[in-house]
Image (cartoon, rainbow, N blue to C red; front, side, top):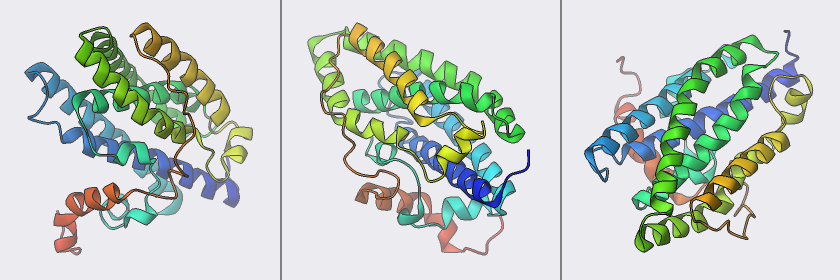
Length: 253
């Protein structure tokens, strides 16, 4: 399909938000490498982090096709204010319950969004979504099993899971806040409507969390516009992630 300039800019912004979400979450998850609760899960969560980084690369690649912007520049040479990820993914990793629940809430959102993207009227998005979707289904199967395992485990594991859910729940709503021009993209069949994705997500997570012995928090108001305003945690994360590249911006790797 032919994109109008307005839709092209809106699509680039939309894809950049998806890519930033994946990248920052991948970085946070990678902090568990060597520190997982058991060896098998240490390896599994590291592999999930690598998958999310690969998905980020795919979305950055589509941004490049639309705008010509170099993916390496987008990753290593933007400041925090220019990133478009939600605050949920930039929060510190916390304990295992917190990181696990964050990944579960994100996975469920991805599996709700990707069927719409796989049917996109813009072929590059449909192809990318078809490639990413099987991996996200695996991620969800993995994290939802851990949610139930810990939610229905001991009093201590349930307490930690509930505390993590209480903290994460309002932040999770940021994933569905409409992006600039998203309505134009949805009307053209390029992406799914955010309200439909949110409804699908809410239906799945409410049922599974309840079945896992957890209570859905009453507070579902996002702290702020999570894509336009960031916490200080993102500054610290980027300082670490971008350190080597910024030592010599002209270096070729």
